Amino acid sequence: MDSSARRNLLISICIVIQLAVFSGCAGLGKRLETPKVNLVDIRVLEVKALESVFQIEIRVLNPNDVPLEIKGINCDLEVNHFTLASGVSDAKRTIPAYGTGTIPMKVYSSVIDMLRGMLGLRDQKKLHYRLKGKLRVEGGFMMPSVIPFESKGEFSFKGLSETG
Image (cartoon, rainbow, N blue to C red; front, side, top):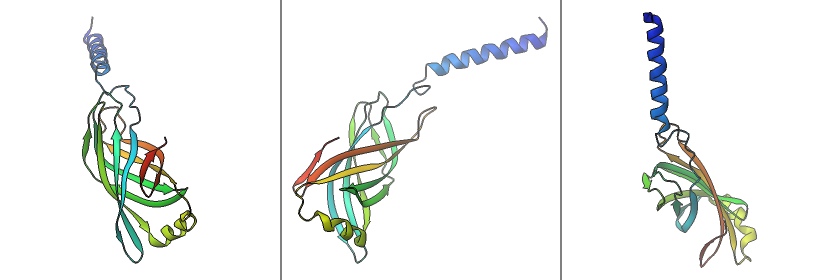
């Protein structure tokens, strides 16, 4: 066997070994299940002339066999099909495999938009919400770095309940 054929054989063997090693890695070909994200709490922090600030708390349930290293989150909070508030957070959290954790964050709303959306809500006992956004995670080899989420529920002025 000449040196060129030997070199090609060696390269082929190295490629096969690398593929075998990578196929044993947790990230290769692994699809993450979308974490379940729920709104846990909402409080008004501040009302200014043109802006309202809310503190929300989000619970993340990780159904995967690998921890989620969250490095940020962005979301929109809708109430009765009206975008009430939006926000981003660089909250760093590790949600363990098959575990749960909470992420507090501030979301912001224009007072004008908030008043416009709240006009039709004064007679309603329950308000429907939708929380939609993206978790930014440390993406390992072949793992996503952005995981979209959406959850729905309802709340009254007494508290929250989840519907989906």
